[in-house]
Amino acid sequence: MKILFLTHAFNGLAQRLFIELGAQGHEVAIEFDVNDATTGQALALAKPDLVIAPFLKRAIPETVWKRVPCLVVHPGVPGDRGPSALDWAILEGEKEWGVTVLQAVAEMDAGPVWAHRAIPMRLAPKSSLYRREVTDAAVEAVGEAVKSFAKGGHPVPAADLGSATRGRARPLVRQADRAIDWTRDDTVTVLRKIHSADGFPGVRDEILGRPVRLFGAHAEGTLRGPVPGQVFATRHGGILRATRDGAVWISHLQAIAPEGGEPTLKLPATEVLGDALAGVAEIAYAVDAPEHGTTWRELRYEEHGEVGVLHFAFHNGALSPSQCRRLLAALQHAKTRPTRVLILAGGPDFWCNGIHLSAIEATERPADASWESINAIDDVAREIVLTTDRFVISALAGNAGAGGVFLALAADRVWLARGVVLNPHYKGMGNLYGSEYWTYLLPRRVGRDKAKELTERRLPMGSQEAVAIGLADARFGHDPQGFISAAIKRAEAMARDPRFDDLVFAKRRQRLVDESAKPLDKYREEELEQMKLNFYGFDPSYHVARYHFVYRLPKARTPYYLASHRVDRS
Image (cartoon, rainbow, N blue to C red; front, side, top):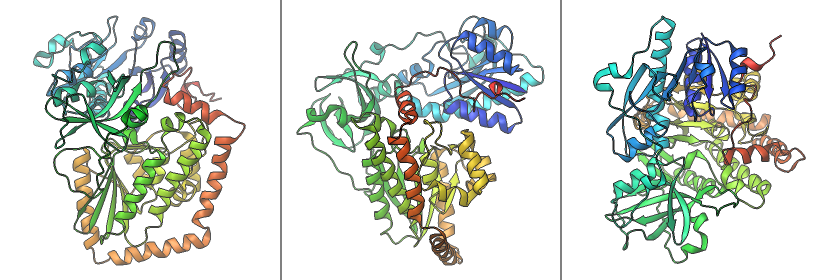
């Protein structure tokens, strides 16, 4: 069928559905929900059999849903209505929640149901639940709904679904609903309140006299603070704050600007608080320190026999220069260990998304900060490529984009969890050229023609396509923990294989051959010459795109590489 996505943004859920429906043979076009007139024009151009709304912030116009059936993906159980479905489920400690695909009608979220799925609820940030459980359930439910629609099926009123209908109409969650009382709220309550607003809009609070919004909360299982609400430690840019019965790490803050003030960015907590933290101790945590209870750290190294595993769970998968340096040091430490295989595990939500654009935007000299950032991540990629005494595996349990994809390709093998989405391109960020040795790493896997096609088309790719074209080597497992466990078992079997030494020898020989053909440093030099034009040249496209991205400015139109219905096919 011809399907038109009407969406506020091409977010992770929309990308995953785009991939899955495309793989089923449907022709999917995308239109950003800019205004009624633009949507009406898109409908006339695309002539869809079906409209799917994976992510909207307003109701579908009546002129649209009366012309074409419109299926809305709602992150709530049947009968649930309102803009804060997942927020309320987290705040109220629901053990099980759901995703419902319903048909658009005059009343928002009140239409009949085409399909629904139940999801288990973790004590986790809203963004993580949305990215994993909600997205997986939405893929299943949308797939069922589309098949039913194609066969001439009909939706049923939510009230007819019996015990599955336990939702109700609820208002937008207000800041007052999430307000933390540090003297009364226990750790779990604090976590739920911050988790419910993670990603957007954050929980409004005050720390050391400064009005801020809180993001990135993690439980601390050992350390205790003397006074509830007090900040008594820092680590890797995060702060540790006492609760009534324990403590929580808060990784990021957003300063609340005064009325009429300049917009602010979500940044590491210690950067926002600055000198106000004078006297607060930094608590170091060795990368290979064993897990003793619950805590938060961005880097963790562990060993399973002859397999080393390096976890790096950076916020939203973005790498600042300081994080790159810590990751580089962790890599160098891992390489001193007597293992035969090194797994680069990334984090459970993201493997890596490349350089940290918000950290760059927050500086006074963003061009210089961009240059520092790209060189710092290049250093990490180089360290991986030049690891010739063991086998290196990039095991992606979470999504990767831009420089993060090419950083993964620096390893000898790339393994993907089945639901992983890759965005192996840079150009959407103001025609950015990109580095991370991609001009060496990508063509050696897929060939020069395919490399050019991937970087030019600027579309997401699923794990099935990635393996089919040779960008990745295997896809298996699904949930992050199960995937990493399976990856470790595969790596252990690889290390025990009698042919393993031959494998490492062949790898070392190939590196010498490649170096003779063209030195690794030459690839970097050529890429950085192009990046220098992006950062310092006369064309400001990268700087404009970065500004729009980090401040979440709505799109004025849908890019043509997404809006296939707007491309002149004559």
